[in-house]
Image (cartoon, rainbow, N blue to C red; front, side):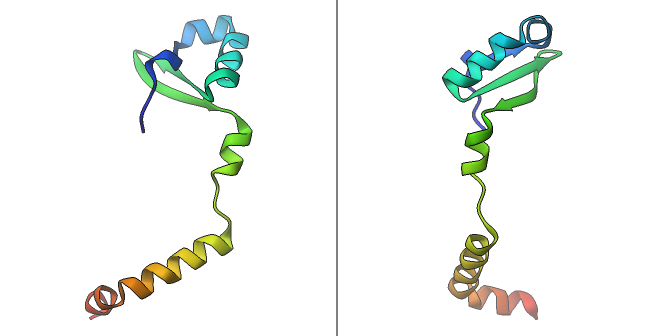
Length: 79
């Protein structure tokens, strides 16, 4: 996962000023809260996450397509 350094914010600052984190998410789509100088928490806009989720039917369709494309490999692995 790529992290934009402009969206990183220290834990102490996020605790003191969460509205700043919320504004950052509204403007840039995400914010990364750092804890002990490491990325620890990812805050996302809920609408973004909802759109990025594949439905069961879509996953099943893609799975069948991949199984057909790689039928030979699956048959070898099944032995």
